[in-house]
Amino acid sequence: MRSRTGIAVRVLVIAVCAISRGTAADDTPIATVNGHEIAQSDLDAAFVIRRVPADQQDEFRESVIEDLIDRTLIAEFLDKRKSPAPETELNAQLQLLRTAVEAGGTSLDEVLAGLGLNEDRLRGYLALPLRWKAFVRRTVTDQQLKKYFESHRARFDGTRVRVRQIVLSVPTDAAESDWSAAETKLKQVRQSIADGETSFEAAAREHSTSPSGGQGGDVGFVTYRGQLPPVVTEAAFALEPMVISEVIRSPFGVHLVQAVERKAGEYSLEDVREDVWNERTREFWTEQVALLRKSARIEITTPN
Image (cartoon, rainbow, N blue to C red):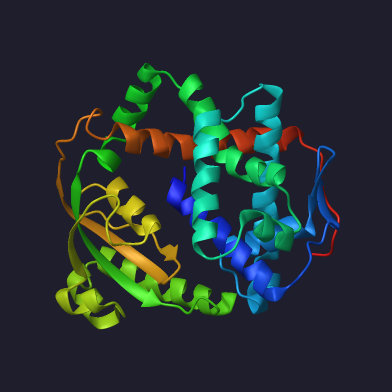
């Protein structure tokens, strides 16, 4: 999950923003999950953590509330299994945060008062990712982890794939019709390549808005956690050599991807064990949330 420093920075951001605004915490319920209330103050804090500007909060409100619902479901799940956070790690994070706040010339108590919080609620916020990670460590066996590594080896072992892409840039705030038009155009380009009317390289030079277009779309060898958007990398790693993907959306636009060549990596599970644990921990969270939502009683109590 997040590093200690990362959590401290995010909580500090909440504190600084809340105090500078001078706003009091709003405990108005905005959602209920199996009887547990999520307050407006929880949503306000989540917006700050994610650095969502005030003029974009209406746009992201639904997705952020859904994330808070997920956190509430996981907290309830862990409560039922009496799965606490490791006390030593939790105290260390709290002390790290306290030290960072005091270095700024104020006290943690003042920060919490500005947020309308107390130390118990702060500990609960810090504890959730620690509780989940501890639960996964107890639940996922070494054999299961090894199986996961083998099933997703290319993600972790240093495998490199040489990628070509054709990109049609679309502004993130564009209308859905603009996205659809770009997809339609790229599907036509793909069909033209499949029919032998042009090559991938020639199509990239003619149509791609990415800087790589001038090189026939060639972005070179990339690793799974390389420089491309994750959705594009994932598609490239799933392709056989010289096969062209379907049209893919990313935050930057729409893409066609071709995997030109693959070079196998050499890292073993022991070389990348922590990376594998972290990836499995995130996926396990997603899987468990999906199961919990099937039987959860969830009510959104505000508009949108």
